[in-house]
Image (cartoon, rainbow, N blue to C red; front, side, top):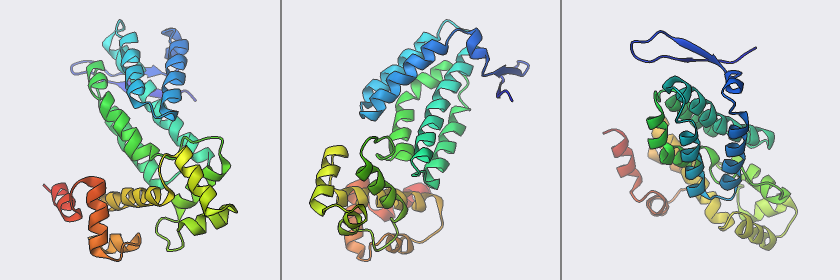
Length: 249
């Protein structure tokens, strides 16, 4: 079955493209080249380079008609997200949150009607990948202990058993070895990474659910309210209450 994309401009008749149309535009090699460069930089967390590659790609298709520009850019930007989700799924660390965020970003991309919107939204797009879809853990490859640790953290965030000692025991390595691996591969301590992941989930639930602040913080092990406020403010720059109030403005 051929995938079909609809593009409609104001005052114009609906027009259909298929993915095979890329071959007509002779862009398969260009797309593959930018795709490889982008993911190589993303894996190294070279986000400014990622932005540059997306900008360069947009300028690469500047000579095309507006409809063709939108079609190709949409394919390229959305394929980046779907490729990341595939990596998560293959490594068995795909979380419903990441999938939900991916759908949100794709839905927004599909509303962009010209190449200027793509160019102006590149920084936003990279930020969404970093903060809402990648979550600092899905692109690590080659370290079995780290991958397994990330998987365990991901699925036990709201469980009291999740400690550095427990993780090390599951991996059958010492806590010192686990800490060294995290510093080397992730660039931070195990405990700070766990806290950051918990904060990601708390922010998601504050934003998209009707649960009370008390219910959410206790779910993720923050029994002491003052302690929770300190962590939250350090992470978001505002108190949890202020954050929730801003959501309803």
